[in-house]
Image (cartoon, rainbow, N blue to C red; front, side):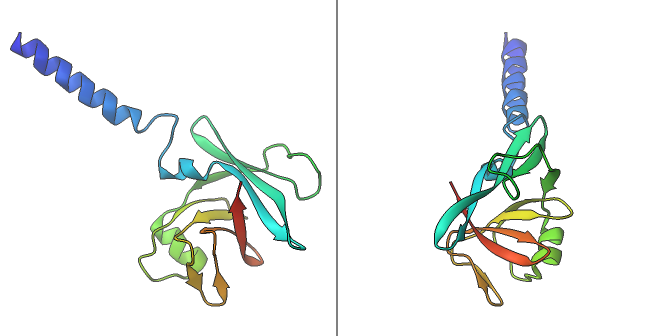
Length: 136
């Protein structure tokens, strides 16, 4: 009986550990959603992050009023990549996903680097630099 209980306890622990690695993803899963930027004082939907299987993909509304086909795959951002992208040398709390062309981050609201400051705590980073984002 004791062996059966130990086996059951070990199985439950394994299931709990594996459930954290499943389709819900890591902390980056909180970035799934639609992001808008302000243009002429109004919010305009621009980027959508989705999770398909074990990967993140990005769609946009840059050239069309509807969401594009998946444009790129995005990977979770490591601390090393964060430091390279943002040149931030502080121990800033962040969550991010990126491709070679675009990154999206969640940081503490009010985070600032050089002349950029995010009030919402979300920002897009691309070749032109950071842009404040609003998660809808």
